[in-house]
Length: 430
Image (cartoon, rainbow, N blue to C red; front, top):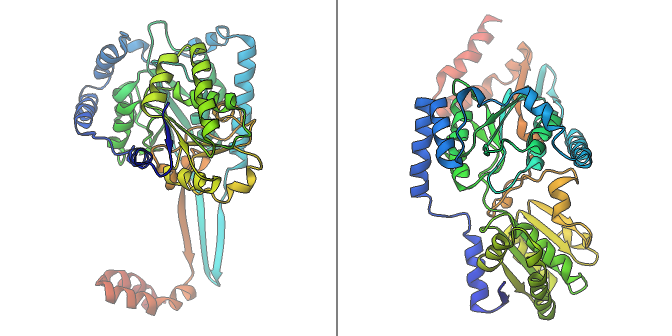
């Protein structure tokens, strides 16, 4: 993992590369994704079966596309009892957190005779995408489905890529604990297209949430407008800001925890001490051989990761705000004193004993977070992402009359005389 020092040419060049991480050339990728989406629109389930065989290497008969309730029930017996308790605990904590964050209606009366209200309605049907392939992610099921159910979404549809030996039993148990209504064994672009447009088997949804690879992310971007999406997520990211008082083993472990996701993950350490930076790099080499996914983590650390040495913690905060990371760890003494200076991050982890991993699984707040610098303007997935707000207004005759001249002035300026006529005709009648 490279070490870069503030003021060096390579330091600034690296920051420019990180700053442009969301601007990949997607022309050829988009062309492939569009062709799959169009094929799913045209051939429906047949296209799902075809692409599942091509991309996942699994032949799924159409009658087995939908996961039966009996398969979900059997999954409870296929996972260790202690892990089942952990899933139940995580589901409870995530549900409790999102219940506490749930918002209600707001009623406002600004003047006599007029009532203004904003009512909140849940979305009718939501699709959640749960990645498969390199790993099984029951935590993502909980994070995507529970806030939707807390918000009052009537129907949650889950899609996940199939494997030769079936869907992970932990994913199926998590889906049951979270209240998922229907599950389909299909992934990739074809799954996103099916959720967006519907097929004979899979109903069209109103919104698609959940992470995926670059093909899934591109597909979500292309179907946006037909349906809503949570975000177009990129590879996992972590920035650790640390002083010399943090055990180097803690920091190295936290960098590895994100690097192991995939080769394009972005692990960054910002520190004020070169000696500490060298010790963390040594610790990385000590810990990596213990990892099953050592090769993936090593590629990520060497290709995209960096240790940035700065003059003080103030500069560290400035760099973090510039990067706007998905995950930010403040591994420093008195971390709360630095929170005020932080503007952009998907989630912030404070102190030596709050690793990013606890947020991924059991803390309660959502782990589906903005990446690629989008933390500058977007937030973690939550209950508010599964509701819509509808403005409600009621004016009586006298209240409307008070605004007649104002409406007239607007309509004259904008050239929309029919608007004023709709007010005027009521005033003439009264």
